[in-house]
Length: 122
Image (cartoon, rainbow, N blue to C red; front, side, top):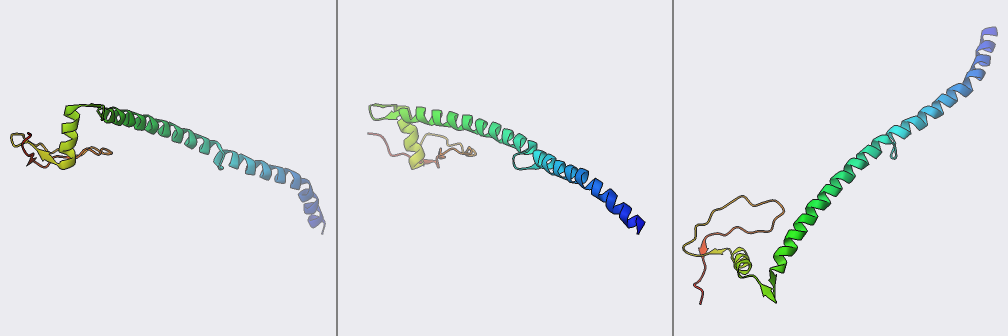
């Protein structure tokens, strides 16, 4: 009986430190592993770097496309660009041309000519 009484007394004194350690452990775990913890912060920083890099790539592609579109404006049409676009859209080539097939670049809408001759220009 005396042993049980001694265990209850010691347990009563240990409850507060154990509870404090448990609460501290809970918050420490979530400060590191939680949705807003350190690991999530580092993952978010990596995602930001990747998104900024992707944004720069998309901006470069957009600038290139805007420059190509500006060459096809009705008030200033570049004949070479017009000829290139007509060949790509119609998949045609001149009879004396040699067609070289290349692997299509990713994320590009440039068509590959199929070697069909164009009708003579008048």
